Length: 125
Image (cartoon, rainbow, N blue to C red; front, side, top):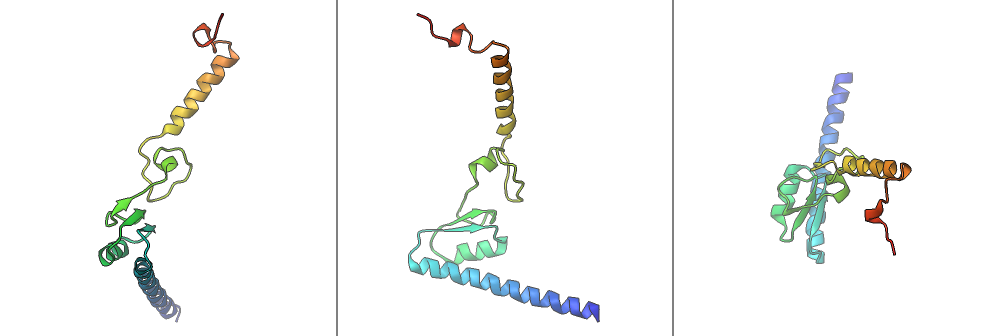
């Protein structure tokens, strides 16, 4: 009995998911008809992103929505490694946070040890 219930529950979730996908596609078409100049698709499944991009005549911009979008966007802090978030769709192209922390530690050390500002970085009359 439990197995049957789980199977029915899975089918209902699948139908709900299909209805949600249809609503998202319908909303994209409505937005285009309303005159928007582009649509951002965030965390959208590949197949749905592709379908939306193919069905509308305005640009789709993806953030975690696959290569099928017309363009891509990432939060600058995420791609530079400044944020602590670890999202599936974020590729960190560098870890600038380490560089910043290292520079701050060097600055603090030099200030504490009276090495900064040296004559080179001070004004004299």
